[in-house]
Image (tube, rainbow, N blue to C red; front, side, top):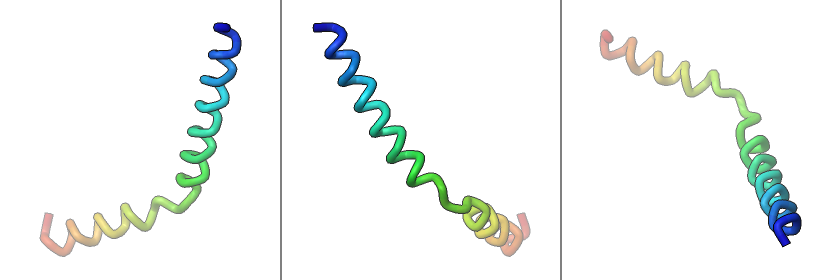
Length: 44
């Protein structure tokens, strides 16, 4: 019974990991650039 539980947990973890991985493939540089521009425009 515990082996079946662990298989289910591992499967769910893999599915969650795949979703996060797919959603994190974008370029993060644009968000940082926008924040940097905002800070520079306010004289920070």
